[in-house]
Length: 452
Image 1: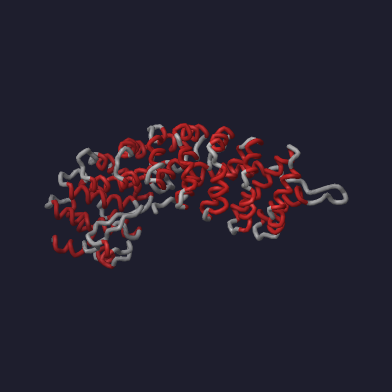
Image 2 (image 1 turned 30 degrees about the vertical axis):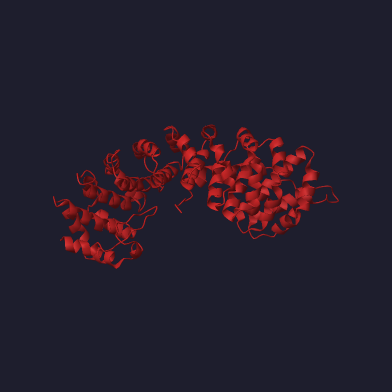
């Protein structure tokens, strides 16, 4: 029996990922999940129900480990293969193996359950309702080997990720205390997986963000944003800042502004996450704190020289500044040189970003008009080549881009017709920009953020 299982167990995989973790011996023999012929053969031969029967038997720990090993390597295949494992009844026996007195057995059960949960929200929720979380967390102790602790921590993001639906509040309540505890650990792999789990938990509603913030976890996250767990920790902090103004203020009070130097980080991915963590400061009080910390020069630099993903985050930051700032803050924004890179970005293909930039320009012109500064701003935009580019956008294939560009030209840059009339401005420009930035604050946390 052990010999037969070892043959199937030659699906030797040593790949760690956001979704799957494989039992393996030889990292050179990686195989794409779902395309391993041995996996297909074992499913087609009806082997899985038989393996599950053996899981329920009181067999030698090494045999149980071998059986769980095979199921671990089948589970991360296609959704059909994962379903075959579930329909064979493997879930509850695997949960029971978490309480095994033999570490090799309980550790292999952790791996298998992690791969099942990683398939999607359906199986994730089945793992949760099987009461796997308390059994898994009971394994965490001060004397647990670091490799086993990494494996236990690795499953947490798979139990937190996916939406439609998000994990239930009860599961969050079960996991948050151990996540808070593990955030104090020194191991970078443990910290990374904890931060990814928290990043997924802070997606969605403000109530979910509140559950995380109420644990007192923010100070630790901000500290990690200064270390080597940058991407997931910044992602989590950024998600929190997308919440209410009070949640944003809590993040600021905790020290989120200390991530500002990361806007100049040599890696664009870190720049993007740092901008994401800062770009939802909407009310003028928050904007003033950012300006006081000299955020405008690196913001302009990102707009000018950052890669496109970084530039997009910077555009959203400017949009939030525009809708939430006072006139004095808008003047500082304009004087920072932000208009030049914004005008240059009007040639990109991303219509959503083009519309945001046009609405920023439109709103700045409207505010300048109210304060008798419109002529100077129009001259600046013209000197930067903005008028030519906005005029060209009147012929854009996207109707909203064309209409927004037409409105700017007709209202702000056309000389009055002989009858002394011009087309009226779209008075809703400001409200539309507010709608877009508000929608961005509440929806972009669902963007998939994968571990690089």
